[in-house]
Length: 126
Image (cartoon, rainbow, N blue to C red; front, top):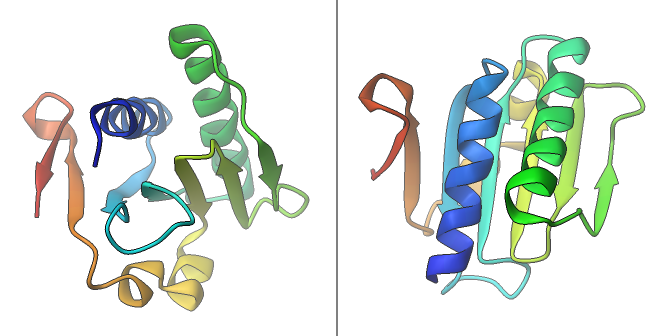
């Protein structure tokens, strides 16, 4: 993944963690897809938390990087949301919806980065 996409993915993971997102994973798609350089996937326990995670990511990337999403989808029910930043696509799921979509399995050949909040908010290659 290029440095700009990596920086944005780390920023998204940090911002999601600010709102207590669970199981934050970055999939490096650069060599596997033309859709995006990376997916950032995380879980919120309720529709309120999903909405809060999305709001924090949008606000934080606008403040820190001066970027707005290309589109935001799925917030109507708060069970799943997608934030498209072009090179980075963010998926915020409630647990049961994340299991249904199972993006980690669908993209299992892509390198995976797990967010480790206990290690000072670092992303480490899994």
